[in-house]
Length: 241
Image 1 (cartoon, helix red, strand yellow):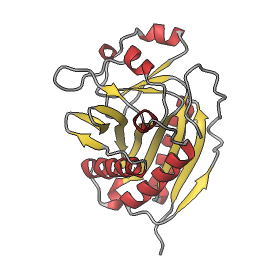
Image 2: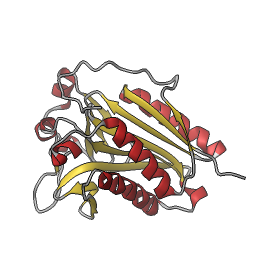
Image 3: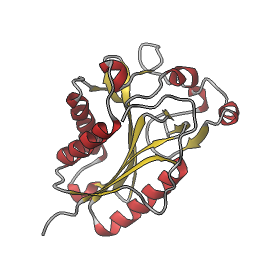
């Protein structure tokens, strides 16, 4: 009997709260049916604060952020503060770990390998660091990773900076790194010094997630009734593609 497919949702620019509702629904469904689901999307400017984050990691008061049109959301994933912007891929990977014989550490390791392999396709040598979660290019973080687990089903996942405008990260976040320095952010395009079309990055991520987790096939969707697409109206620059 074939293994259940990976259900892939390419949703474009969507509301942050809609994405949370969708991944909760998918986690519930997968608990009954097995398989996995990968949501790849972008968000309008939003700061999400995980279990390792705090208001102390924000340079700006949350009320000031909201007054500037930047939403603030507290979430139950691991990791600290993450700034979501257009031009950055947010990946929510809903996966039943127990069925695959994985614990949290091995699950995160598979996710790290998928992101590193994706970066390699764009001639970038990414690597994890023990001092902070995510994937780094040199000393700068290009991808964040933070997961939550319920009934041994993992959800949340990662962000990958493709062409995100990087100045807001320094203006908003003061997340601790190592040796007393705050974490700095980078992106695929800033390191390559040339465009990285979003469609190509998404296609690579799907393939590498399948390879890393031993999945053999996927179904692709471009919408879901729980999610409303948004029209970009913010001044932050977007990636080509």
